[in-house]
Image 1 (tube, rainbow, N blue to C red):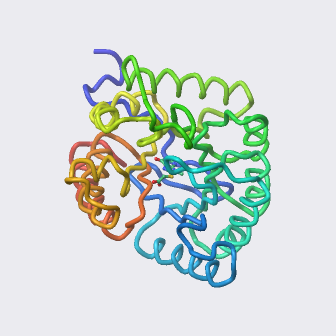
Image 2 (cartoon, rainbow, N blue to C red):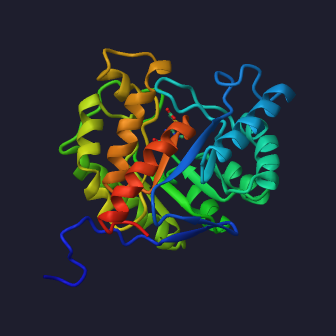
Length: 295
Ligand code: 8Y7
């Protein structure tokens, strides 16, 4: 038997990553709470009341067990149009600044734009979550300059059109090849491998079958050796197996997806319903601990 070959999935990503001076312990599954600052989520996005309620929501998620909060101002839902850097900065920066100063956990910025990465790092953001995996012009260089950890996510196509006709030779192999190529590009740009996380990008240019195949084979992505982040919370892949349940009836299905991913070795689960998912994770963690698969 090769050294380290225990027959279990390989989990040799770093145990603790430094998020701009704040540690994020990934020796066990942790939760990333979603804070969406797009106008369709907080009705008068960017204005004072919306900012207040966003900050309140972030504190609540931390109380419920979130280890990191992901703040985003660019809608990446299927069919969404792109927003300008100015607009995105205006939505995100006031809330980000308050959260970075006041929250006891790191704050991640969900952006693909170099200007937003730089501004976010300037006010103390702890991670870059880029659904374009640093493919925008200047993004590799900007992310490298921040010194922050980066989540590289797979997406086929772009949000406006990605669900039209997703196609793969073999979805998991194709996603792994893409992620491997982006890890190579990131490290070539000077980003330390120990600062990278991988995400298969559930719902981003994938059919329901593609999404469940990826979830079934998530252990292969975990075996790439970097911490894996997943986001399935409330997504259409959940509704699809629940007789097309609307978004507000996808909690229990989302919990099941989170449990399956955590059991397969995912270490950061991006969710809206932090309290409920934290209880599910406590049960998974008890299993992982007995299996010798977590710290
Ligand atoms: C994901 C994400 C979204 C995901 C990562 C939604 C910003 C769509 N999904 N980031 N962002 N992974 N890393 O429904 O799956 O939350 S937006």
